[in-house]
Amino acid sequence: MYRVGFLAKVYGEQCPELLQGAQIHMRDRNGDTALAIAAVRGFRPAATTLLAAGANVHSRDFSGLGILGQTFKVLNRAKKEDEKLYAKVLSCFVLLTDSNAIEEPTELDEWRTPDEVISKGLAADDSTSVPLAASSLYGHLIDL
Image (cartoon, rainbow, N blue to C red; front, side):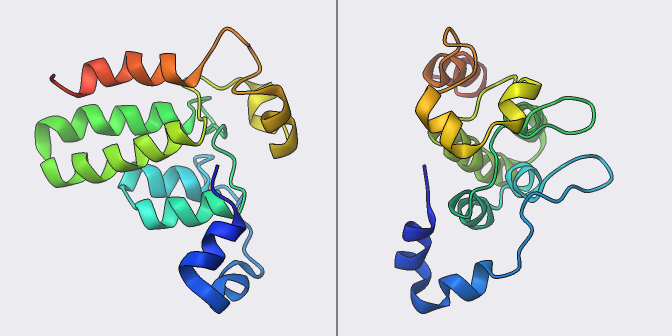
């Protein structure tokens, strides 16, 4: 998982100023966090920065759809309509799965602290694993 130490390497001395006063868990009128917005728009540098600052990969919008699910919906649409957007969003999708995002987060997943997530493993339900979720989704996205 990306942390502030990673940002310090990338941004040097500007890292503390970049994160100072930022409220990364705020939501818009749909319940989307900054990480969800960055991911579905394919803004990987913003998503990386938010993850390094501790953004929750398991947050859900007000309809209950997690960030990985939102990103998957955009990928399906972009695959047919916009190759550039598809590539950008796929990059964020991979970043999210590498950060242990799960396909269908529960309320418990959403409100866990980062320390609990790290100590418990990948998800609240030990039968759910990120590689399995990612492989089931990748099969629909990438023609091998």
